[in-house]
Length: 126
Image 1 (tube, helix red, strand yellow):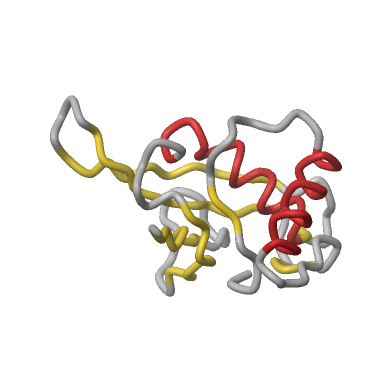
Image 2 (cartoon, rainbow, N blue to C red):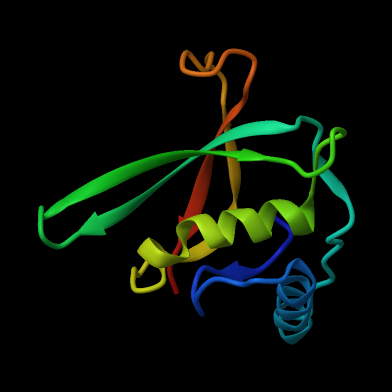
């Protein structure tokens, strides 16, 4: 999903349809075409990790969370980005590194939830 431009800001979205429209408009402004209906992960469960700076602890905090697709065949680009956004926006929207730059698959086993892939959010800054 490195072909979509997006930033984790603007709060959470209540509607997948409104979110997809916002991302589509954002990508049009960047002269990109996004295909939210395309299946991008052929699994129903995924573990995701990201990092943010915690001012109180003066440290980088790594957060791991699980997502479940609404469809047994896997995640579409729209559903995945929607669920990623709503899961991380509270921590990332004030961070320098709040831009989505794709996902990286961790090649090792997920010991917490066997047979579930782990992806890291690639975070970028302006």
